Length: 230
Ligand SMILES: [Zn+2]
Picture 1 (cartoon, rainbow, N blue to C red):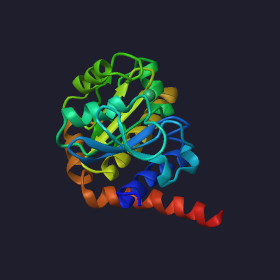
Picture 2 (picture 1 turned 120 degrees about the vertical axis):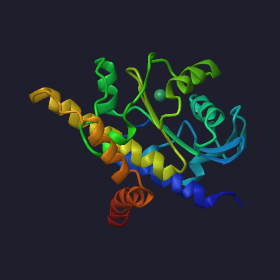
Picture 3 (picture 1 turned 45 degrees about the vertical axis):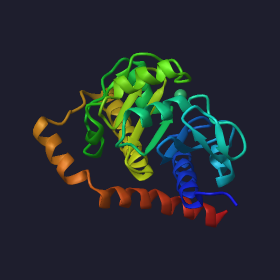
């Protein structure tokens, strides 16, 4: 009998919602820490759009499979590195979304142009497009991340973290939505970046578990709609 069914179901839901909303493609991974040195993570070679709990494995921080079929993604080092560096983090997501990645490809700083998007501002950038597939790259990433909830990886992708998978999921949505709005604003003018005062207000109003759950539920209901229509 497989363990951690509920956590696996939540992880599957997270990845399928990201895939459905074109934030995650055929690559990308999400994890949840379930013990001081164990995590759940989707196997590298799985179909994100048709994911089930059988595609989730349990590994230790060296990548050894404790339970499940298949191997973890090569970039499991990213997740292990974040959990080792940050006791406050219990979930992490990494993928290669269009809009936020194109900002770092073009060398543009992420600007807070949208209230929800300001929650991850300032957003640090890892100055390398290399895969986080070893301990050294994971260290570079966690040094870049510092105590922030999210970071970009230049011309590569993004990582978001949280105390729960809901936090990491919601922040990723906000970040990507902000990046798209910023990109589009650059096309027709100069993006308006929120002031310090406006940023503080956004943080006070919007960084709250009730609103995060509402955002999760919004996407979750859409996923259920598709599953039921099928
Ligand atoms: Zn990657």
